[in-house]
Image (cartoon, rainbow, N blue to C red; front, top):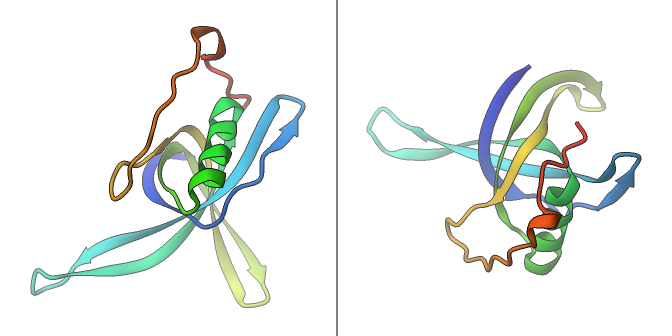
Length: 127
C-alpha cells in the first residue's frame, strides 16, 4: 500500500454512519490533474474518483461542512490502494484511501473555523 496526498472536490455530500469504533463516512473525491502540453500550455487530464474512508471527528466534521456548503474542495492524505474489478462496462479500477487527515482546501473558497475544547480533540482514528 502506498501513501498519497491529493486535493479535489466532493462528488456528493457523504453520509455519516455509526460503527463499533465510532462515526465514519465514505467520501468520493474527484481529482483532475493539469497536464502540460508540448507548447507549454496546460489542459485538464482525466478525472479520477477516489473513495476516501474517513473516521471519528474528521468524518463528523466533513459531513457537517458538506451539508452546509455543498460541493467542497478538500485535501486528503492516507494509505492508498487500487483494486481492479469487472463491471458492466468492462474492467474498472477503484481508487481507495483510508484517510489519516482530511482538510478543507482554501483555494477558491472561504471557510470559517470553530475550535473545539481540548477534551474533544485527539486521535480517534479506528483504522
